[in-house]
Image (cartoon, rainbow, N blue to C red; front, top):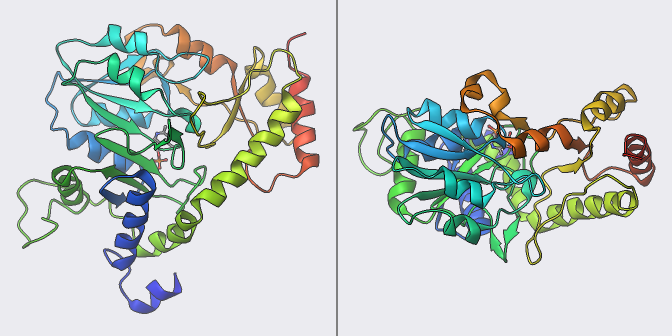
Length: 341
Ligand SMILES: Cc1ncc(COP(=O)(O)O)c(C=O)c1O
């Protein structure tokens, strides 16, 4: 950060390119474009699809609302698709059922860092439907050995503080398409051509990430494996303590996959009672994420039983690498009091 400040080049400088190179390598793609948030990444990725009014994009009914918001803001229709309440990811059978002649793309989430089964997703969709990843919480995660954020035509990452690599606010779009990367670069910088003069063929935004923030992210990215191992170790210490408790379902990944451990979200019948009770005891439990069909913006799409069950039963436990054994014991004891008899 000091180097950036002394250089005088606070944005669109060499740290942006350095961060982008590390991100592309981490996701196994040709290009990464750093932007100001995960939401900005999703917004630009969806805009780059060139959707028209009436076009449909499939999104999970249980996800952070940005996944669906950006589709609506791009002038298309986010079509909610139910999730499997045991994986919390899109249910492939429901994806298959949701496809219409207007379906242009799917924005698939690896929720909380659990890799979505990419093959099942592909098999559920006609070949002309474009596959995008909301990998906001999945940097470092791998599906069958392949990095999340590199599975779809574009991947969207977030560097919000609850993510494995954080710049306070920040995000990136990953892709191996030069054309898409150029389009994203143009749109993050007012529509100005990445190479060439100051001509603006189409209007763009300012979604840039400053060199100061890129400098915060670079050393973390270099330590990505180490950071992931530290998070995995906290997950294992939770699991050792929680696995004997009847009625509490623990997060996991499919065999052969690597969980990204963005959050540690358990499932239990009394989660909605447990969350305020744990908070009362000074334990920062949270909801997992949102059931979009229960929000006013998306309520017109009906009931989604999987997403309702996911929301009602999910509870995110405190999750960071400084948690002590004593703190974990305390959290687990508090959770146990709400496990079903
Ligand atoms: C699945 C998912 N998508 C999108 C976002 C939005 O990312 P950001 O907060 O960086 O805008 C988040 C995180 O907050 C997320 O968890």
